[in-house]
Length: 62
Image 1 (spheres, rainbow, N blue to C red):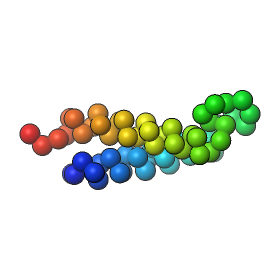
Image 2: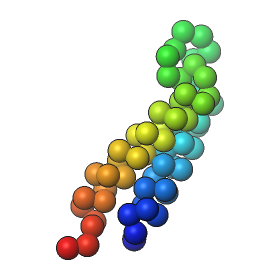
Image 3: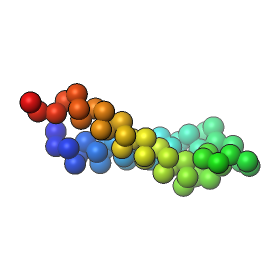
Image 4: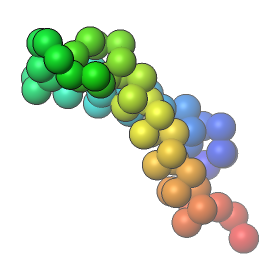
């Protein structure tokens, strides 16, 4: 799996996960990250990007 493909997939999964968290569990007022859908989605995307870096270190070709 190429590095770009892995990062793209994990960012999209993170974006969807962040949006899903906002939709089902996010608070309405007073929350810095989960109060608005786009902040929660961006946070999820950043987490997906960081997690992809960890995964790539384990599966990168030797």
